[in-house]
Structures are given as structure tokens and as C-alpha cells.
Length: 409
Image (cartoon, rainbow, N blue to C red):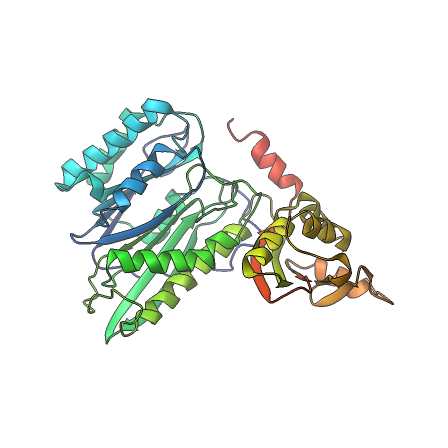
């Protein structure tokens, strides 16, 4: 675990409420040579429903493939999360490990195999040791219950702080609680979600509607972040709803208070997504990239991602250099409609370039002052239409190289 906490970390970790119908346990299975908990077991009461999104990578892990198939059933009794080994690109051995884990948990709970979900995160290319996993599960079955912060810590790899979020709402007179935890720091450029993220609620909701809400929330959150432009083989986000709150089952956006659950899920997803960026490997700046005036929202999103992923833009921000020319470069290479002489660029709300050139009487002092802060705003108006998008990223420092140059060792 990384010793130095990111300078962008939240100032405090909120206290998270227990959610009826969920039991939390975590133990040290020993996937690596460390003395920390690295196997997490979430147990759900019967009739818990689940929704999820997985990586669009063409080389997904066996865990991702398992979750994709299990999600079609919409029911869940358990989730196992392994930290320190992603079990990706491990051939039949990786698939056998997933089969062994799900079979052991299903046997313990006397439930169907498809009600057991599995995620793994860590080094790619090393098979997850079945004996280690099964021994860890045996420990977890009899372990003491823990709280959400323990679970958030146990799923970490290069993360420097546990990432959690909470919401409390009322649905048709019933108090409903939501908790989210996530891990992610590097290999972050999600095509769907982020590395490993989980949302839990006691709301009563159909699996189909929960899927709709999660998909909608994802488009405004996890799919709007990037740390290093690399999409993981293991990206997974799952939402579990126990129904223990006792509200009438929500099955449509037309149901009373369904909008409240949508807002709460979206708020948690956005909070967790931005925390991942704030813990970007080696990050010292949290950067918001806003694009307006594009040909469409999709076009604006692609342009914003081009800016947010640019190593030249990110290193300029790390160096507190108001190099707007690099932003122009990133817009121009995005492959989207743009006209040089219609562009305008702002740092911290201060216009620095417009109509194909630097603005008259440009004063770099206030811009330089903005770039010295930890929160940086870059905005670009394309000048062509009504399309808009906002993405979040971080700067690129020597710290990123240091973390990733010896990750396997």
C-alpha cells in the first residue's frame, strides 16, 4: 500500500451507515507478500437484485466474463473481491479459479452459482492461486463482521486512500440508504465504469430498472474520467439492492420518488469517480475539462477526452505552465469538427486565446496564479454548435512513472 496519501485526497472520510440485508467481512488471504486484508466477502440477503457494467476491453478477465453472464439473472447473494492479483490474461487457470471461488461460496450459502459475483484487481498475467483463494474464503466465512471502511481499504491496490460515498433519501415514506466504495488509481480511462466500484442500497427496485439507472449514472460519472488513457481488463461496477427498506418496488422512472433514487445513485457515482481522479497515480492537480459549442454532445465528449488524455496538456498542468497551444493541439487531433479561428480557450475562467490567436493584451499573471492551485479548470468553446461535455482528469508527474515502472516488483 502506498505510504503517502494523495495531496488531492478528501479532508475526511464520511461515516457510512450499515445497510440492512448486507454482511461485510474481510481477511488476509495472502495474494502477495504483505500483512493486509486482500479478500473481501459481501453477503446479501435472499432476493437481493443486482445490476452492473463491465469493461469494453477486448481482453477482459475471467471475473468480468463471469459477471457479464451472471448479471443476466439479476440476483445476488454474494460478492468476492480479491486485491493484489487481477487474474487477467491467465487462460484456463484463471477461469478455473473463478469457478472454484463461485462454487465454494454457492455451496456455503446454498445458492445458485449465478448469484455469486467475483472481482479481482492487481497484476495482470499471474493466475489467481486457487488454494489461497479457497483458504481465504474459509477464513472469511467465520470472520467477524466489519464496517464499510474496512472493505474500502481491503479492495485497494496502488490507491492511497479509501474511497467511499453515501446518500440517504426517502422513497414513498420509507428511509432508504445508499453506500458506495471504489478502488482505482491507475489504468483509468473507463469505457463503461471504473476499475472496481460497488454501490449498495436497501431500496426495493427491479433489476431491470436498477440497470437503467446505473447506466444513466455511469454516462455522467465513470465514463467522464481519465487518469492515463488506459482502460483496464478488469473494470467492473456493480449495484446491489436488498429491498430491506420496504418501499414499494420501483420498476419505472414514472414511479413515485424513482427520481430520488436516480439522483442518489448518480451523486454517489460522480463522487466516487472524482475521488478516483483525485487519487490518480502521482497526481498533484485535479483538472476539470469543459467543452462547449461543439457539433454535438458526443463530439464535445470526444474533444474533452482528447484534451484530458493528452500527456502534453497534463505535464503542462503539472509544471503550472499556461501552454494553451497544447490545448489547441488536443482539439485539432480529436478528429471532430473544429475551426481554428472560432476556438476560444480559458484557464480558470480567464480567456487566453480566441479567434486563432492569443487574446490582445494577454496577462499571464492571473492564469499562472490559478495553475498554482490544486484545482484547475480548462474550458474550450468550439464555436460551432450546442454540444457540451465535462470530463475530469489529473496532471502527469514523475510520480506516475515511479509507481508504474516497477509495479510488478
